[in-house]
Length: 437
Ligand SMILES: [Zn+2]
Image (cartoon, rainbow, N blue to C red; front, side):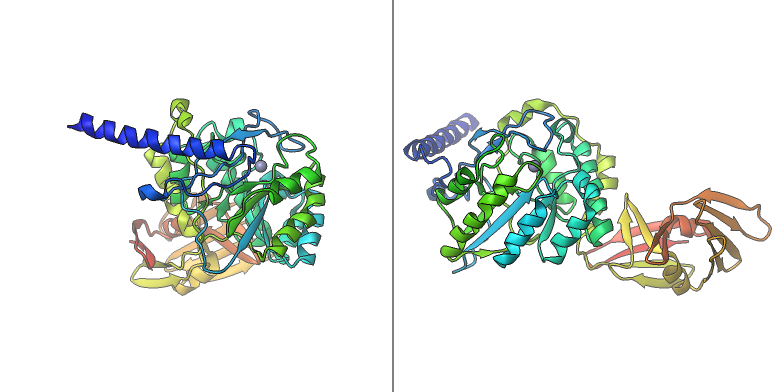
């Protein structure tokens, strides 16, 4: 019986593939053309879109990279949600910021166009001031990994994750917010497996591939005319995510940009930045990914790194701390989750719990008096000393962060130091609750 079912399914699949191939063959010659929904009749919400997938040699560096485009990927996810009557183009610039970014910003400003910049952490470190200019101009920053190194990024998921978090911290230090949008270096096709997609989604990220590749990374020095032609000769949909690069060596993209903008303006498109509430455009998983035998992260690693991460994004959850019969509430923004630990502002939290906090500016120490305990936080040496009458003085190392004049400290450590072991941490749709003895 099951045999019959399988063969039915197989026939369906083969038919679908044949239809797709036939359509592709008939459209041959216009590589960038977006095909109609071939599978629409089958009820499957999938579109067949020839997209250029970069096959950059493993480990290629970004600057002036030559990226070949050849493969055709099937796009499974529903494309950007259609909004009746509106034509929108989402210009995206990868691999920056670089010396070219300012020119891109000028052109966008002139056109009153908004865009999205998928930046590299190492470039952000080099040119933090450009990140500010991008944000101040009203564009959106996305995360494009730290170093774009395929060997590292696609070795296993935890390496990819590490680079995303590292870049995220670089950006947060500059802008105060964490980018939720992620673009995989080289796109997801041939790189992401199911684990990558699932865990990034679980961590609260939105992974965006693209609808149309400008081809500016196909090889070194693609001329502006060719880049513009790649865009203007392509069949357009009402919502288009366009891939371009503003990394070093992409001066020709900058030259092509006014023409590309004019093209979309003439056709009545609006220029917008990608948002996290859009349904992302994502490529199918390359079937070859199965044979990669990547080491998947352990359940424990996922539990501590990925599971709580989504709360970092726009969650309006409040954190309630219950200790010694007193309850205090920290609204979203008043606490943070870092590597599975809640970090809280010391004074605001402790005073609400009834403690007294004094700051000694000269030796950079905070002294917290709470009940019988006296905790001295030596911020210069990251040491927390606890003295309770009748008990030996205890000392412990602690991570302390100074932000806008206030000290942030891990909540659990703080509670432990003052003699309150955390008994339970619970979470529901509205709140997170930490109960200590
Ligand atoms: Zn890239």
